[in-house]
Image (cartoon, rainbow, N blue to C red; front, side):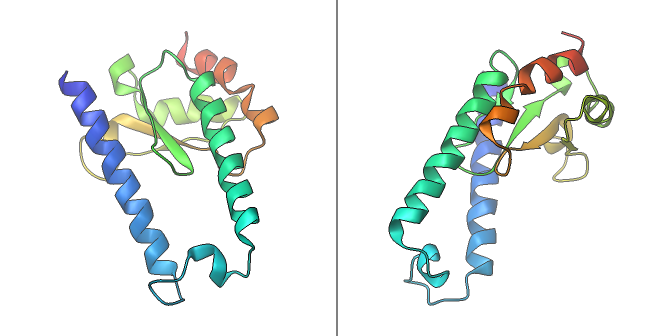
Length: 142
């Protein structure tokens, strides 16, 4: 129960940080949609959001059964490797040997963040993400 609460709070904190980051980079007026400042038609923004959701969903499918922090929306997700008895730095190194980049979150927010590695899926095609599960499980020794 406590782990699920920690994961929920961490997911919410990550989501808030992403919103604040986007707002900080927003140069247009506070009431203008982000996509409009870039000159994008609303359909393009909807298509981009749909694609990012496909990428997130595929990443979640590939990591099913592992202790991930499910993002509500975003471009990355966290895997709690400490729950598996592993060190995030070591897991990051093992993943890189398998051509998967994952950031060890050590030093990114105290003892809760220190448990995780972060996968950024926003710029990865679904076809490439479809091989993620096999590589991650090999790096984890599972």
